[in-house]
Amino acid sequence: MHIIEPKLKLRVLGFGTGLPDTAPIDNVEILKRHPETRDKPDAFLAAFAKKIEAGFGQGRRRMIRLPGDAGSVKEITSEDLAVKACNEALGSGNPGAFVLGSTTSPRYTGSQAAAVLGKVGRHAPAFEVKAGCSTSQASLLLGYSLLNYGYPSVLVSCTETLSKTVNPDVKETWFGFADGAAALWFERDQDPNGGSNGYRFEVEKTVFSTDGEHVDLYTVPGRMPPLREELEKNLYFINGDSQEMKEHALVRYVEIIHTLLPTEDARKGISWIIPHQVNLRLIEETTLKTGMAETPVIWDSRENGNIGGASVLFSLANALREKRIKAGERVLLISVGGGLNFGGQILRFY
Image (tube, rainbow, N blue to C red; front, side, top):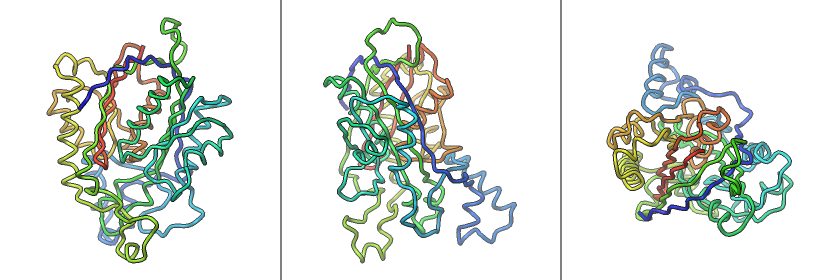
């Protein structure tokens, strides 16, 4: 993997998140909906729910479409969630450029980025990114590049409605997906010594790569426009080998960390890890293999579930909201997703 060291200093102008206006659904409630477990005793369901949370790190999540339910044309979309996040991030401001990342656009040919920008009532160059569960990484990288190209500020938003991809025939997908969006608005820091007004960070190192050989390993395989025979085979839901995907992800996570942080001292210099939020046990295995088991992990999936390509940006925005990250700390963003797309970034806050 090729390391890029942009040494780009940024000032955060705003951030936001967007969740569906639905009640959180916990593991027990999902088990009560599933045909294999709905009639089990409450004690069994409670124990099973705890086992799921211990392994995957997911206890509750917001879902627009509950597992087993049919869709509706009135359902809110990824656009709607992105609008929430972008409105919060922007306030009354206007971005110099806009990047929208999503794997769950409701539009076949139209631009979801343009639609979101229109709904927030702004005019700016709009770009769209789709990179599996590494969409946050890819979207941020494009945002940094646009600043270097000369745009005065960039709004990056990532949004997913993964509950609509839950496979009725694959139990693990009933727990593994959720909905949400996030946004981060930033500009070049013209005065890095200008005090502590708001969040500032330097993009120290980044890596991003793709292994297209495994593009169909874990994905929604149905082709567009929809075909009747593929609809009848449930090919517009998540399909694939999750165990093989986990094995590939572990190899790539270790590779990313060893590339960005080749020494023990470099790894000890990381204050927080913000990973893609699909499998806590996988992240724990990764940190154990790389000597980073003591480094705190920011894990929002326990309360908000896995929101796929938006998860890294969501957790970063949430950490800023909660003021978890302090000046002088380094944060490692890391993800592996469908494609396979995989990448990491080191951000130093100051």
